[in-house]
Image 1: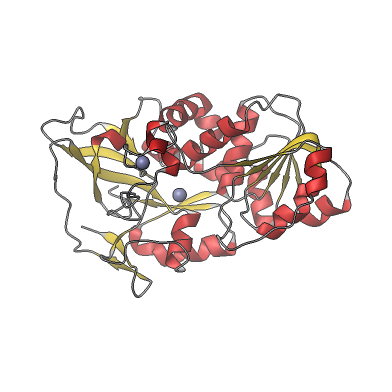
Image 2: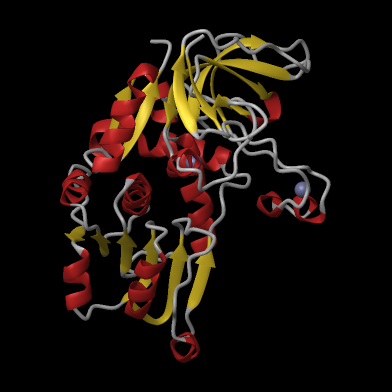
Amino acid sequence: MEALVYDGVSQTISYVSDYPVPTLINDTDVIVKVAYSGVCGTDLHIIQGKFPVSEENSLPLGHEFSGEIYEAGKASIFKKGQKVVVDPNRACSLCDYCRDRNYQFCTGSSKYTIGIWQDGGWAQYVRAPQDQVFALPADITLEQAGLCEPYSCVSHGFDRAAPLSVGQKILIVGAGIIGNLWVTTLHHHGHRDVTVSEMNQNRLKIVERLDTGYRLISPDVLSAETIQYDVIIDCTGVAKVMESTFNYLNPGGKYVLFGCCSPNAKAQVNPFQIYNKELTIIGVKVNPFSFPKAIKWLSAMGDRYIDYHKLGVKTYSLSQYQDALKDLKAGNISKAVFKINS
Ligand SMILES: [Zn+2]
Ligand SMILES: [Zn+2]
């Protein structure tokens, strides 16, 4: 089968047409025929050698994908042809964190993640344990479902940031795909007083397509004005950005650190402000138990929001991966998604 295979030792990625098709191992496994499979910021970090990945085997990356059941193990609840999404994350289910509903902090083996430690969705077929697989309702297309995994992370962030009350003044920093998913989420939930700051003009233009009426500005405008916000959602993962934007919080404000900073990055914040304004800093890590919520969001948001053109998502074949990575780097698109088996 076709696949984009990453070699963790040489840190190179290559397109192959003869990667072995996966087979069932356990009776509860399924084989998913992949339809749409996204390129995530984490994948870019992996390719740059900045994120741990399997070095024992080269493997197809890709942890955000939709597709249909191609084969189901004999003890599986799924049927061939069912449309599904797959949560790539899995934990040990035995440590104290897992048993206290916080499996994102699992202290057991983390080497289960599909697309990082196990063969992923940048391929025509993927094997997945059925407890990581979720059936899609009829009103969600496979194209829309290609965004389910990133929405599951936003949905966890939304819960972590709760309550977000309509009328609060909100600043989204960074308008890559994650910023755009936050834009759609907040607008869908009734938020209207939202500002988006993004330095790439192409990306700001993409946000206009969502037609939310949100104020779209560049970081120099943001730093020149003296507006304060009740909630700031960082979608950049850049420590320097946190350093400056942290000063724009109102008393009682919340800083949601959604973008993933490099493990060695440092940012200076003023502890007196945290005391004096009673500020809250909220971290958000992946998507524990968030797929069912994300699927409901996709249904409720529908074509008004979940539209590749409006979100700046462009599709590519697996063999066009170099164009996909180039367009992403240039910021002409907010996200690249591989369209497979069509
Ligand atoms: Zn991801
Ligand atoms: Zn665990």
